[in-house]
Length: 113
Length: 113
Image 1 (tube, rainbow over the protein chains, first blue to last red):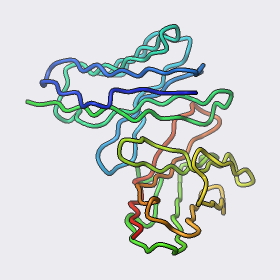
Image 2: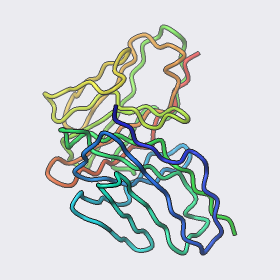
Image 3: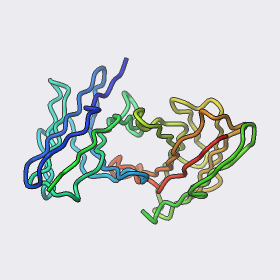
Image 4: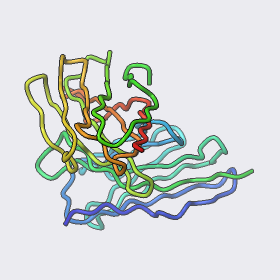
């Protein structure tokens, strides 16, 4: 069966360090993968999209990699700040249906001073 | 994101009652979605609509129904609410002509007693 796995344990890092979050998937052949940020009690907000033929994508302090052989995406936040504390969700398009997304359960990031 | 609004934001109801959650968007998107989110389970797709005449069931449609009254409006109904429908409900939109990014509303917190 299709599965998206994100580390359910919170990631605690110190301000200024690089945070790396992992998204692994099985039984998917996604055309693209997306990352969203969600703050408590609020709707997810889109951050980055990376396509299957792209290895890496950057946006300001964010970087996403996509390895379709390993079936894994890594999401990096460099020079992390307390304001980056949130839950980060990865999402894949459904097999054969490019308009439906399936979301992982998310990883909570806590950046401390 | 004020472009996608949900009403009500909070709702308490009793078992067996029929309730409706409403979603409106000013983004001009053709596609709309309803998700529920439970702690530790991530976002689960209830129903989605690719245009006014197209309604599709998601992963967990039992006990729910929807109505796409116009391109900008998509309502979710709980026919006979039960306690395990207590959750956070999100509406989302996307544009079929662009990337498959989804834009989420602020959510409705529903408690079924």
